[in-house]
Amino acid sequence: MKMRLHPFDLRLAHRFTISRGSIDVQPTLIVALEDQGLVGWGEATANDYYGHTVASMTEHLERLRSTIEATVWSEPAELHGAIQDSLAGDPFALCALDQAAHDLWGKRHGRATLELFGGSFDMPRPDSNFTIGLDRIETMVAKLRETPDWPCYKVKLGTADDVAIIERLRRETAVPFRVDANGGWTVDEAIDRIGRLAALEVELIEQPLHADAIDRIAQVRRATSLPLIADENCQVFEDVRRCADAGFTGINIKLVKCGGMTVARRMIDQARQLGLQVMIGCMTESSVGISAIAQFLPWLDFVDMDGAALLAGDVADGVVVERGVCRYPSRLGNGVIGLRPGV
Image 1: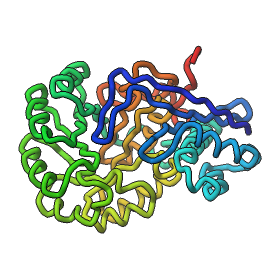
Image 2: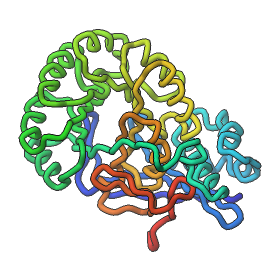
Image 3: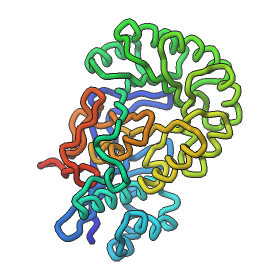
């Protein structure tokens, strides 16, 4: 088995802003595992907030190249187990490799990863939201108008104008909104704003408080019946129980933060045992990362997999999300066909 690394800068269709900052270009690393004519693809984006860069991921994977290429495995969890300790400080790199292993696993068996997980394409699957980044209200309205007919929209908030933003967007569409504060509210702000947002048909609130304020989530929970979904507070397997104990009603799993698909499966099982709702969210990434998320759809309550739809141009072909509906051009592995010619 051979490993190949492909760094890219993904240009966004529009500047994307959350409460922590803005980006126009998203660096990403795509990992390919080649074996007997088959190629498995995986991806992890760089992230300043969590301290992972394309250079650091590349360095860590190159250091383990001989081990990765020499490891014999029949299921992705075996490769994951063989290298997870060596990549304990870099779950993003581990995720890219683990995604590639799952894609290769399915292609080896001539089946979709979803099917090897025990699912089928006949099972119900949630539709994805489309994300409206934080901006001037007029710009956010324009972005919504450019992407009509999605079944729901996730709106990034975290300013003094939060309620006014949703009031204005509500005049454009009757579909549900999901609000993501990215930890931008205080407890008092969260309680006040969530109460008013509920009247505007917001269906859930993601990460209302900063991750350091997890001990105060219960105060917010007592003040609202809306689902409270942990994101920044839910990074690894051990966080699932912490989020349940703190008062969150659900978790948003990010494959890059937890270390890939192998760990995400365990997190879903743990969340179900604890009575939590489950969401998987994306980064701003290519169709490689989105295709990995698509393999979990039958087991999710909510999904945010619009990352590739936010790009000015994709670098890969795979699963496609059209107006919230996931389409599978290929049902082998994760559904990644490959990199686009010329990229």
